[in-house]
Length: 483
Image (tube, rainbow, N blue to C red; front, side):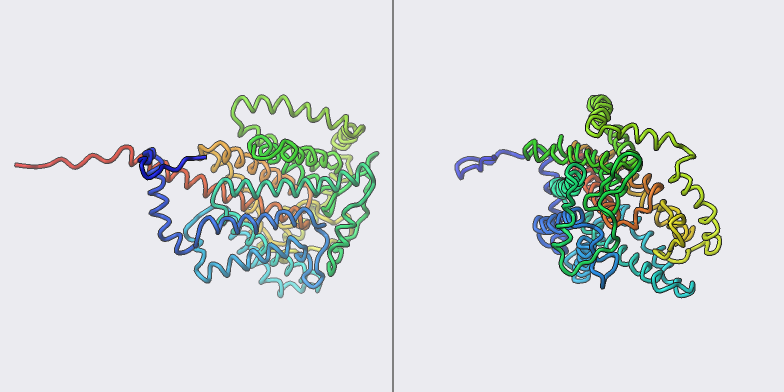
């Protein structure tokens, strides 16, 4: 606590850097407050809005939708659309000025949106079926939801504390999803069925069995739509959970480390190579971003984690080794290789903007593209594919750049973890058609939005430092030319 000086006591002088920072913020805030209102209240509303979306994304089964809305009609999807409407309304009414901030993730969102809308506008010329047109419309609604999440998160979270509060809810929501998977795995009890019953008016979009056999093991899915989705999400978020557990000391060890254990447990429970790929990629990026001493510690602990997984689920490592060692004989890999000629033929028919986003329907199970890049090349064409590449790659570079230009340890740690999550997401898009799955697609939007926040915060930090430097070293007065 800081003591307030009495009337008889002079206030202690503030350091020059603090005075400069206050002056810089004061100068900029005269116009910003007029446009945005009270910044503290605005951020509090953004934290509540984005945090509520994050919790809904993981708690409610992602395959439960309002039939009248379609694929975007999940609880989280409806909240994302609400965020978009609120963002647009606040901009039109002048309570928010998007020109006061800039972030590369907004450019990635813009490119994906423009390319998708061009491809969508051309759908009447392709003779689509009613089902394909519904898929195209669902994609447009999904883009609106992406925009709501990305823009509100990036431009509404104004402090590192606000960003951490939202990420804490992301990790705890994911931990709940993984806890449901753990109960399915250990006790063969499907808690997600009770959650479905708590959503009157919603219906199951894709029905599936609670348990799915793979090799000698059974895989589960928690509140996701598929075990691969569960594994990829857990692999993306495990490093972030570790960063919050070590950096965010304001909560008890149970609240900090409990999510780490639950998320880590979901990786073997999914029995998915994509999960292992995701956690390896995200962890490698985070380790590369760590200072020297924590990097060595992490490199020692990661093999220990593999050993613990082997003890927790006997046969998992052997089964995984068999799946990886199958090589070209693996049916899953063969299916992806067989898809290449079909992808080439479909792209050659509509090379520039495809048949329209969300319009590809497989004639049979063998023609399903377990690869988001294949799917988007077919639906968006080669030009439209640039939007998807920007959606995946720009956040990776932005997070790495934000970490590099920041000197704030918590922000650097969070940016490194988000860079790992974004990289894992981009890599795993080669192994499954992720944007067909509501929870994964929503998490990608959350990651992109929070990376935008990191970029804005690191830029503000640099402006304050430069202003402090100018105050500390004022320009010399011009020489006098007296006679």
